[in-house]
Image 1 (cartoon, rainbow, N blue to C red):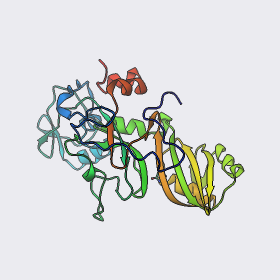
Image 2: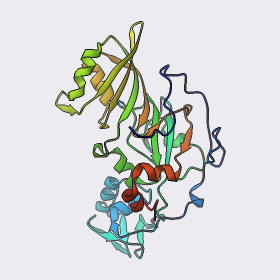
Image 3: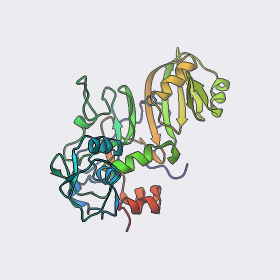
Image 4: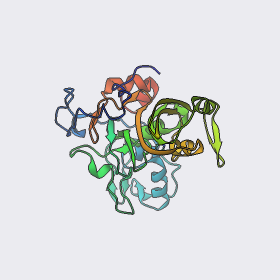
Length: 291
Ligand code: URA
């Protein structure tokens, strides 16, 4: 891995969760001010497919956009679209449910320490508390880069740009997600080493897994696990396969971004320069981060 943004926590899993909280517009303990969406110049819109333009505007994911188009909720220049196979540019007037599409802002990214007990969803059918209802006031509308289960803690990346979220969550982006795991049971390093080749569990293929025992603590073992995929409940499933029951799961890094010293519920914006460095020029240009 290259440069890591946000220092990795120390091996004592909870020791590093002790520094900052923060509201948009306030200075964090590291001296970085959160900015509102207003002081970021809008990104110029190059011709692109309608679903991508909607995702760039931060309204929804591309997949949702396609569903909304099929449901007849999206119009271009006054005509309701019947198919997502439609290219739009800055000259087009796009409306969703009759409301103009918000102007695409330059993509922004935040590191957020998701506390346990929050669902990674904008609305939960069971009425449980959500990540998005518990973010600091004044933050622009954001979507998450993938999801963490309700009881998983730690690093969740949030962005104003649905297309960026989709890109970062794709396994082909190849970013390692690292988890510190406390599980009930015992496992040998040899058993963990066998995961390096990848593993199939109940018909689901998991690619290469890097795993090591950090320490055994009475009946619990602490592990560090790294994967490059983002499949549903992947860490818990792999642990169960090894005869372990996960009772604490903390994501400590996602690609070059680390949880660092963010306290539970705290959020910190990634500087644009750093984001450009990590995304590379082509994607940064496409997202309007770099002219
Ligand atoms: N693996 C899981 O089992 N749960 C998560 O939330 C993330 C990875």
